[in-house]
Image 1 (cartoon, rainbow over the protein chains, first blue to last red):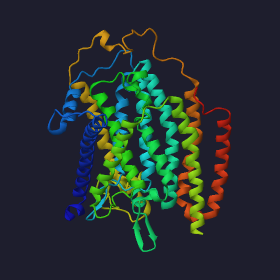
Image 2: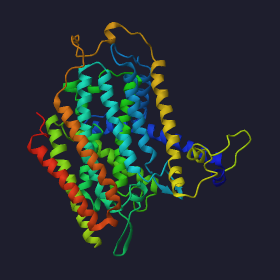
Image 3: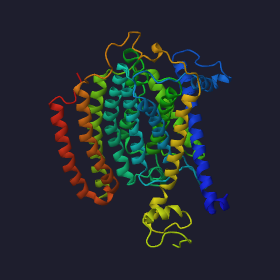
Image 4: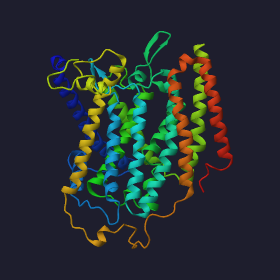
Length: 337
Length: 152
């Protein structure tokens, strides 16, 4: 392995293989996130959930995927054909690209990440903002009133919560002094006898709260799933999509859920550090926990009304995030002297 | 850097690209070179993802039957035949939200470099930022009082 790394061609072969593995794991994880959600929601609502295809319904998603791939996937009349096809690809590409800079762990001196960029978090924000384009363009190109309204609502919602999300992380960067995700996870404290990494939620609890709410809104999940409120908008921007193009939107939504959970893990819960648990396994367990929190929220809360959603974003989360930045700044400077 | 026979002579037009092409053999010790190196895997990953996504998008036309009919291609509006085009005049609220987003998000971006350097700037940086935030909060209060955040 080490000889392979020294050889320039072998080095790049390893890099490309690693990327293929990341994409494969991500696709599989997405499928099982959907399965996990359906089973968990089933138990929350006191019904069994999928349990027919394979043991415990584990092959349900493979069955659904194959069925959807072989469905007729047409472009409806009078649509903007090019944009209609490109919009779902933007959603998937943006969702996958965030994983280029997410560090999964450091285990026996092997680094489980693709790129270690010094502006990691900014890059994730940049590519996840592209999701707005996917939704608003999909809604616009569909030539359907419900799609258009769903797309516009979604755009307004996403940009409203993006600010609160961006500002909620500023205290974390102030404490750590870096935007590199690895530095944030490795942030070390010297508290009396204890020296080592800590979960940063202990230092910025308000930041975590704002991040979690904003992240649920950013991924269009219940209780913020206004863009696809089926009682009023049929399927929102998804109304005219079918077959593999529908799968792409669906895939992007669940990859975004996993990304948001991974970011919560890395930024607030110490990433791959968890007592004696091996690093990559610890990261996995924490991400699964946050994915479950998402599902739990979906099973518990009803959907918000649109004006309430906007009020929460602009009148509660945004001022709270700004105050959080001010207070954290004053405390850091006072403690540091 | 040496050139083989037949390569263009004189100064290379794009030294950075040449450096990248010869990576990792000629990895430069300069910080800038190292910075670029950390982005090379990212670039490869972008290409792989675009390839994958393009494949899935084209597969959607290859797999599955294709028997379009006039009714099937019509927009789905709960069984009612659409009389008017979907594009209509939109509520001005959406434009207002977009403008507010531009105002506050561009200012939020300024927080990032400041947050990274805050421990070095200390009180000076903090007070400078308070002035900046003051302007931001005055704007926020003004919009709030004039009902810019109310969605009716």
